[in-house]
Length: 140
Ligand SMILES: [Zn+2]
Image (cartoon, rainbow, N blue to C red; front, side):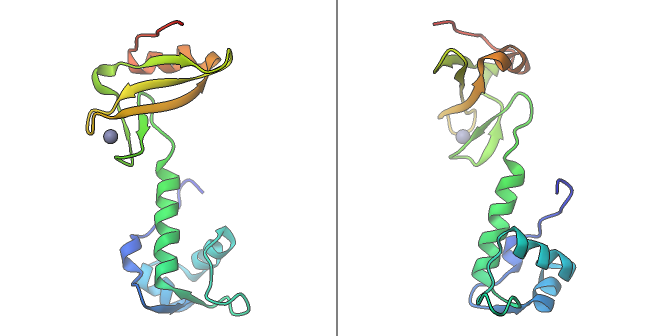
């Protein structure tokens, strides 16, 4: 799961239909990989013939898979949705804002787009998490 390399989605062309063999050749993956993608949610053109795929569907699937694997943030980063990337908050500064006694959000500023970035966290993890930001913790 973690080690699976996801091919460049642009290798799957729009308005093109691929058989499993054609698709595996176009993307440079084994056809077993394509079969695995079908189990993971890649939709064939027709359920009765799990052999043919629309390029558009393949692209959308690969893009979603890439985002999924990028999602886990490194320590000291918060995922910025507009930038679609994990970002180290500007100045290493985050605030903890409790939502409930047990959960809250870490809030920082994205250094690239200067929008707020948020990360939901359990109160119990705040201490360990804020240490990775060199952060200031604001109590209510
Ligand atoms: Zn950003």
